[in-house]
Length: 87
Image 1 (cartoon, rainbow, N blue to C red):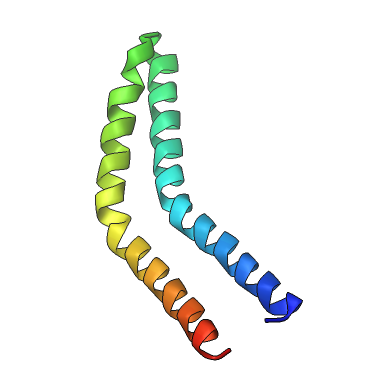
Image 2 (cartoon, helix red, strand yellow; image 1 turned 45 degrees about the vertical axis):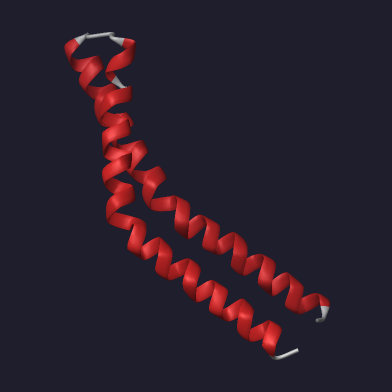
């Protein structure tokens, strides 16, 4: 395996990691901003108010995006296995 192929695999792995993390992080960000805006508008400064909705939203997002994540990882594994078999 040449250096360029190793770099390609590494780049693909980093891109896959970003694709797997992005939906969950975006959901957490949106819920966090919405709760922060709600707290700022109502002047409710309860520290624990942020955690429960974020946990529920991230759990629901994981349930929704898990098939997509599995398909992405499966495709990447098939690609890596094909490269190994082609050596």
